Length: 77
Image 1 (spheres, rainbow, N blue to C red):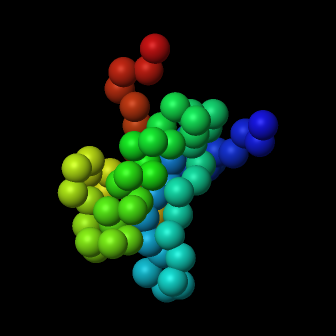
Image 2 (cartoon, rainbow, N blue to C red):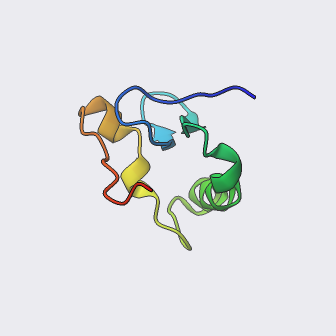
C-alpha cells in the first residue's frame, strides 16, 4: 500500500483546515490501518459535534504543522 507521512514529525495530521472546508486524516507513517478505527470515530465526532468526545486527538491537529511544532513520541518501541 501507499506509505504516506508528514515530514515534520511522522505523525498523523487530523482535524480541520480553518482556511478551507477540509478535514485532514492523513500522514500516519504506516500506522493507518492500526489507528483507523479510532481516527474514524474521532473524525466523525469532530464533524458531527464540532469537538472530540471519546478520544481527544487535538494534539494531532493541522495547527502544529503551521506553527512548526513537531509532536515527538517519547515511547517508541
